[in-house]
Length: 59
Ligand code: SF4
Image (cartoon, rainbow, N blue to C red; front, side, top):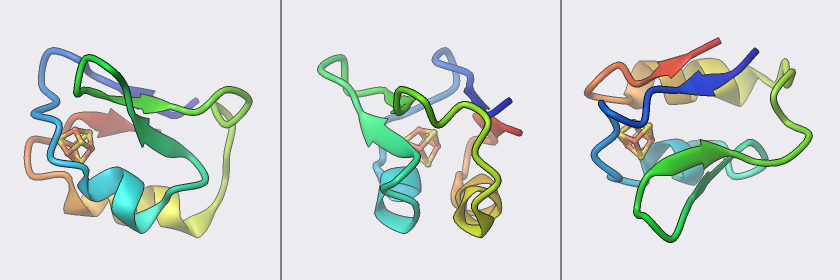
């Protein structure tokens, strides 16, 4: 399961930039996993994990 720790997320937008099919920035300016993408195995999920400077993404 792809998950985002909302407490850690600083809303930088990097995850959605590298993997827009899976991540989006919500109205609260925190990243979230798009509906139906929680089990995504797309390679860009790993990219997003690597690029997140606060290690907020787990998969
Ligand atoms: S890359 Fe990390 S800190 Fe930036 S929006 Fe995504 S989850 Fe939040």
